[in-house]
Length: 332
Ligand code: DP6
Image (cartoon, rainbow, N blue to C red; front, side, top):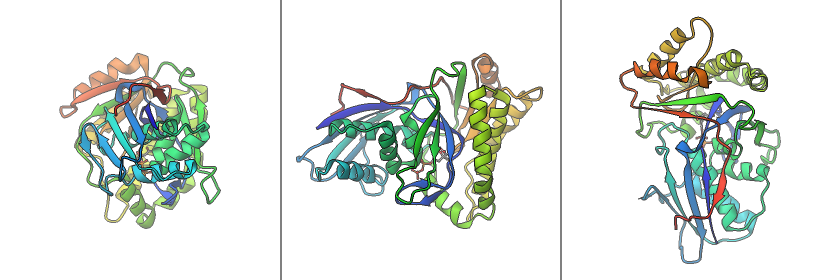
C-alpha cells in the first residue's frame, strides 16, 4: 500500500487569505493561481501499513511527526482513510525543493503530492475534483496544484465543502510565453504562519469586508485577462491584489507584516521598470520573497532589475507546470 507522486507549487494572482470554515478549509472568496514547473517540486511517498503505530512525516530527512508539525498532513490522511474505509497508519516521506514554511508555497506542493501519493497507495479512483478536495483538506492553496496552467479555486456555497475545489481556467499550452520569476530573499520559516495569520485577519481587520466585496470583480478581471492574454491588465490586477492582501494583513490586530525592505525595493523597482507600460507584475505571499509575473521576452531585463537589489540571493524562472504526476521510484 505504497504510492509516490510529484507535485509543484502554485503562485496566486488573486490571493486566498481567509476562511469561512476552519476545519473544512473553505475560503471567503475565489482565488486564481499559476502552477509552477518542477524546479520547485515536492516528491512524496505515502505508505499505509500495520507496521506503523502512528502517522509519521519526514521531509528532506528531518522528522516532522509531532502534532503541530502534522497539522496539515494528518487531517488529509484522516480524510483519505475515511474515503477508503481504513484505519491503517501511514508514513509519509517527502523530498522538497521548496523551503518548509518559507512563504514559497511549499505546503501547496507538499499536500498535493501527499494527496495523490496516498490515493495511489490505496488504489482509490479519484477524479480531479475529488483530488482537489482532498488536497484542500490538507492546505487550501494545495487544491490549486492539481492542474497545470492557470487555475481558479471556486469557493463554493455548500456548507460541507463539496463544491469548493479548483477548476482549470487555461492549461499549460494556452500562454507558453508566460513566466513566473521567483526571487529568494529569505528561506527561514516565517514567524506568523499563514493559517494563524489569516484567521486573525478575518477576526480583526476592519478593511477585510471590503476585500471580500471586491474579490469577485478582481477575479473576473484576472480570469478574462488570462483568456485574452492581456498582460498589462492581468499584471495590474495581480499587483493590486497583492497590495490589497498585504494591506489587510497590516490592518490585522496585532499587525502582520511579511514584507521587508527588500520587498519594498522590489515594488518600487518594478513600478520604475513599468513606467512606460506594464511588463512585469510583482506578488508576495506570506513572506518577503517576491514573485514577478511576466512573459519570456522581458525575463532578462527583469532579472537585471532584480540583480541590482543586494539581498536577493537566488532567482528562479518558472514556466507553467503541467500538474502533479504519479511516479514509480518510491522514497520508502
Ligand atoms: C498567502 O494554503 O498555506 O500563499 O489553507 O491554512 O493551509 P491553509 O493556508 P495556505 O495559505 C496560502 C496563502 C497565500 C496566498 C495564496 O496562495 O493564495
